[in-house]
Length: 242
Length: 342
Image 1 (cartoon, rainbow over the protein chains, first blue to last red):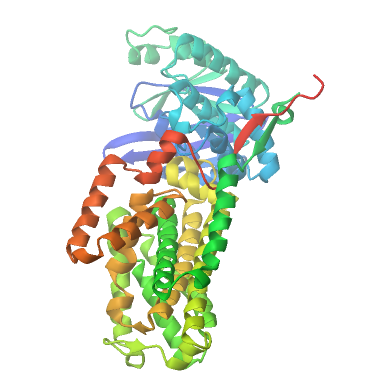
Image 2 (image 1 turned 90 degrees about the horizontal axis):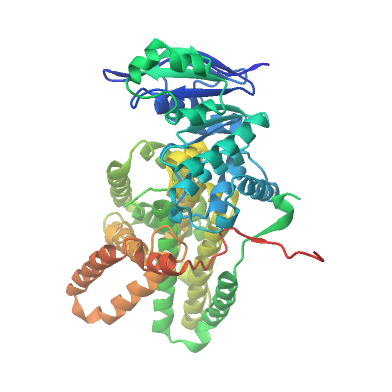
């Protein structure tokens, strides 16, 4: 299996606050990697750096064998990265279907009819078909999260970056989302998934990394990582299967 | 069976079809105006079309691309002066001069865009105004075009439109109707296209738009240049109606930007329907309050404040949010296909 993404000493700070401290790791094609860490550990910033919405101070990002460090977010999306935002960033004045069409026509660069067909398929997969004609600004939280996933999938990515997509959902909603993501992963998609809901993560990912103050402090098998001393220190008082 | 076989996607809704038929009927009626309207009404209609065009263009810029320009008078004035220069010095036919002005405006917009795209928000707005002032001061220096006191369009150039005053007024009127129709059509087709979809995404959320593969800078540049070119073209036509130009009139921030912003904001920024509503409201107010003198501007300001408080998305925003109505077939709708024999 080849490497799809690799970070080499990726560093970023805002003044005295370091959000990424020489992050170095790589992701194999088809792998699912989980990311945990306390609030403010730099998890979302890491996604911003990978996807190009935040420029690096130092380091290099390689995607599918190409150095993408200097590419902007749009170029990286067209190269095959798509993300869901922690705080849903829907196009509020457009319908769910139109939101999906933007990803399909711009990110995946598909012509009209093929884009429409892809959007229909993805909407069915993410269980949003019944809301296809609803304005995104009128959706409830679960549906907004599904829309984030829908849009990312409509960009036809090779690497899917999920940012706390299960956060704030009820157990039932969370379960259906996990099933959805598991199915996407089984179909061969490479995934990096940030989540506080650890049991959701461990149900899908095969490897876990832990961030704190922008540093990677642990990495490896999810079970072993959760039981390591460093992680227990950070999550003092939080049970591993919360 | 996958979803793509069970659902169909369409763009024109019943509302948009009705609107298209009504729109065409109104267009035919307006085309025939020289036979049913007097000279004063024709002039007023012509002015309405020109303001509708300016509003459509400013709306693309501010409502979609997020560029709140208060310097579009730079292009209106440029268009006016280009019309005079091209007809006086090169002997071009006024219609040819108007078309050439549109192209020249787009060319001028390119370096201007490179300059002001570095600015954001309020700085951008001020930057556009400064550029318009530079244009005004620059044209005031050109003695051949009347300098600071202005110049009239030579009688020959005006005559070349048509023989006789009535015919000239009619041709002039049709030009305004034609340009307004063209601007609306271009705006509609652009927003329906892939680029337009990208622009609408930028309107709603720039962060997400970039992350979904949209080249934000290039899309905005394209919009700025198209709007700059068309605003110049409209400007040339405006001064063909006026037959006289001076730097003060050509680069007036009140006439070519403030009133246009009023129209767009009142009508509903960020929608194609908004400028129509705003233009109607603006001209109704203006015609009703024409006798009030300066107090008219105070009333206009009060109306603007009231609408912004009650309906921040403008009057059309109010209608759209409560009914979901869209009159232009820009969007996408889906519905299950009829099952056959099942």
